[in-house]
Image (cartoon, rainbow, N blue to C red):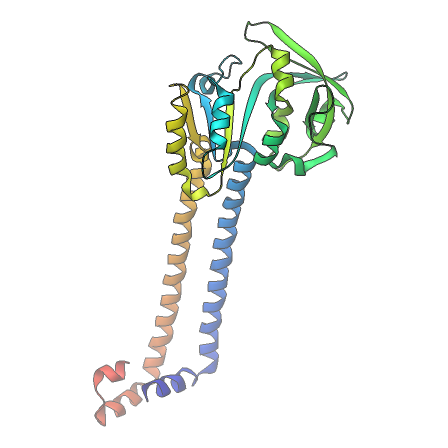
Length: 313
């Protein structure tokens, strides 16, 4: 009987009930859409940063992080890379030989970070192969191929097949350099990556520098939720190859993104609380109006013997 009375009383004023129901639905949809958009935006930023810049985990030496000199190599870096590939839960591993130098064409020159990569391993770490707009991905064919960004190609007036010269300071402090030929032009969602990076084969850059070894090892995990656990395992393994090796996850490499994720959770909770409080006051207002309109009804119910708690219900 109480449910029947409540239902009838709810629709005795259809306009008022429709307004409050509409307000609740509109507010709920708006809050969900806003929270979803903000969460998706940050999630997209994190995924792009992981895929294009940080990977899940990176390994470098502490001196290289402080000052990226070409001589700060990971001890037995290739052996460490092979060992990491065998770890359970590791999706892919790529080692890199890195040099900061200059790229020069017949028209101009710019400072760049020269990334010497293993083309097969790197294609599993970063989705560069899917963002080649002209030419093709570097492989084992050809002599000294190089990948440049569209922005770099425009500034240096390059096209597929153009010749460029890469120069950098070697471990002895002398200027080393070699001619490379553009095999592909890429465009990525990261303007930072496009502005200051070129990619060559690792063995070609090592030959130019007259060195062997790697400066950086990047890893992707099968399950990102095991990040901290895997980091501890990898840290323990890396310590066997050198006490100065630094194993960092993407949160440590990009602390701003990590902070944004935490603040996003807090802001979502604040928005939800504001919505609930606003709806609560709206419903209380409707309830008060309904009660004041039915004072006589409640008096009749109590006069015929209905208990107070049932009237309240």
